Length: 135
Length: 179
Image (tube, rainbow over all chains, first blue to last red; front, side, top):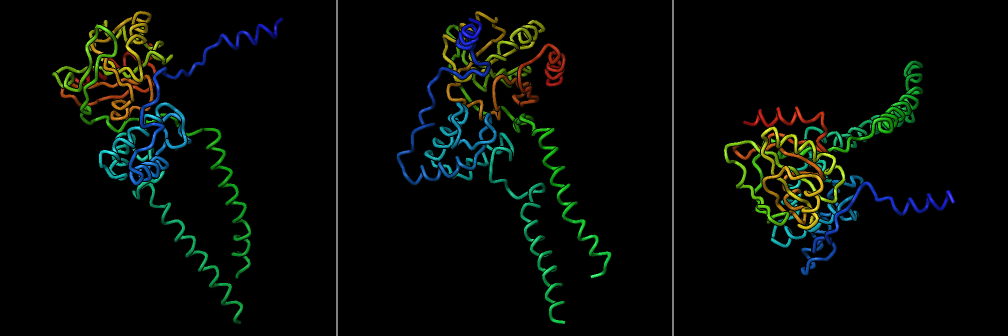
């Protein structure tokens, strides 16, 4: 009896995080007719971060807002904008946070510098080793 | 190599390991903030013109701002639970003389009408944004969010999440500051 009540109450409970009842935007789940533009849009969508699901790109996410962002990317690409222009437009609104391909700036330069520094340290260590062998 | 350098090198892996542990531990204990502030604060409101969000109410366009007086722009939806939670605070702000307009995200006019009937209508105008396009243009990452727009149409302040009773003085101060 108690179990039945619990199961029944589960059916009655509504989720706290609701979604709208509106259908997804037209370009959220349908491709652009121009294959080249669609390829550009898809490549861009894979590098844009979903704002509500945060760990996913908008290409991977089924969140409504990700769908609306896909529609926005596709319509802007179809209108003749380049992927870089669309990315820049979004960065202007949400900051570098929104892109998985962050630009080189004051905060991100160590990402590019670190591999070079590590290779230099490795070379220096290796040099020490080779010198010893020769003796 | 000298004995002392060898000893130091032997410690290196342990030190690296501890740095790794510290990095992951801080990530686990204090996860990354989920709040994404809009970069549009301090910039003019994007151009838009939205149809009415509910029957019998005026639609909203960017021209309705920049009329010399600060206004609140509330981004909400009838399907959003915290939006209902902030309704009393919006009513309180409207009663204090703050002019409030709204954008209804991914909403149907009949649903917005039901929401207003149930929770009250503090809004002067409501625009309907069925594909979140104006929301994205404003750098808003969810519902509810509230923007303070000054008399020149510049976005002055963004409040993310529902307006709680304790947030009302700060919003009032932001509106006053935008005058």
